[in-house]
Length: 314
Image 1 (cartoon, rainbow, N blue to C red):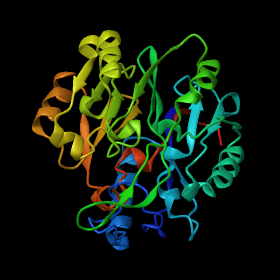
Image 2 (image 1 turned 180 degrees about the horizontal axis):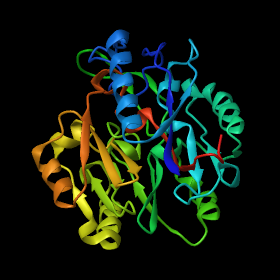
Image 3 (image 1 turned 135 degrees about the horizontal axis):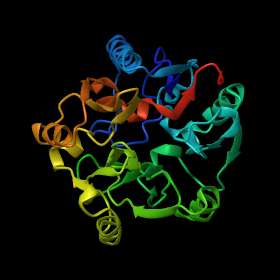
Image 4 (image 1 turned 120 degrees about the horizontal axis):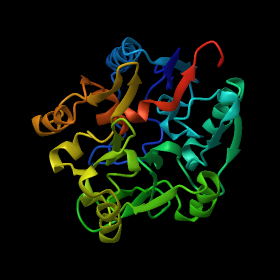
């Protein structure tokens, strides 16, 4: 038998500590307060939904001073991901996380090594499968301008603003090419810092993850043209409303009966109709406490390890 393996981070210490994405602070720059009881309940519902679909969920232990561990999509990426082989025959490429989350890196390395995975690192700022993921015959690599985050003076009221940043550096491209070999990488430059990771505005899904929901207003014109040329009708535009609700931050569970999508609560009827027209079942889960306070929805809460051969992997 096989099951879809995923990693989630224990939410017991979830709070806003760094406040380094646009969803974590109010207009005055004050970090938002988390309703932890509500967050834990939502997390448990998501975990239960995944397990009911047959997924094997590994839970990363919580560390009190590292609340970002609840978002393990940033831990790195597994390659190859969706081939049916033991974890010991795959490599987990660890992220080079932004400074406020850099202490997580050693924990991720220890955890994935304990799963029997070889580990390696990328040379520049990089935040894992949030910015590098397969889509059909391609891999998509999203990147943007890297800035030092923090408060900056400005004209207006309040007389300051908080400067945010994208997370993955374009210079990782050559290293990524060496990893994936003959598979073509489609580079996509993110331009809107509200979509600071690729998985906030893109979601690859389908039997071979050949379809791509995309919020095209979050990327530059050259990247739009590249996606349209290579994906054609498989590229499905998201409305501004669905983008703002982080519908692209969804996950696909590969069940014994085929793909099943898990989408955030509040997804539009338009998206539901499109998914149904492709013959794909779906569920919706409310993770709003993580999204509205932490800037991460369903996908951010999951690191995808692909198929697990039960009885062979640990």
